[in-house]
Length: 200
Image (cartoon, rainbow, N blue to C red):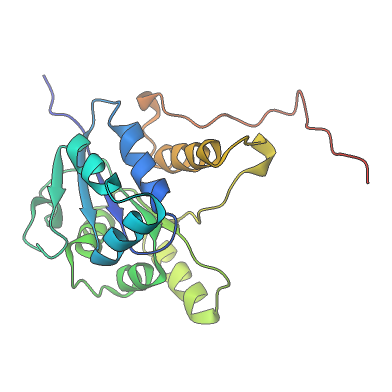
């Protein structure tokens, strides 16, 4: 029997913490081995945006929760094979650190490992507006193999709640890992029944 596939999820301190937590919840329904690393700023954001007990619940459903400052953790090594990593949300600080190789914590070190080992790295950027420095960091991380996927709602899906919107964003991120057999695909767009627009 083969070992379970490992997926690393990082949560940094940008707004949109619910997306990262939902990604973990969805992955927990599969046979994947989930490794989680959360920045100190993200801990604060999670408590503020989602609730005081949200992080504790998430830690309970992952296979391994890694200390943000433990740069010697398993996920910091290329020999620790994974199926990829998602950082959701990804702050500009985290994106820039990954782009420039400023590996001063476990989250960015684990992300750098995905790049050097030619594995999928999905960075769910959460920032607006963007200045030229931000755009250059986005271009640089793309050039070295990362996938920049801003947290962007799909209004064409006509979400009826914030939860539905978060689910679609989370499923799109998981889909970018290329693990099609996980059966966690976001609904596909179809032009068979195009939405109608209200008359102005």
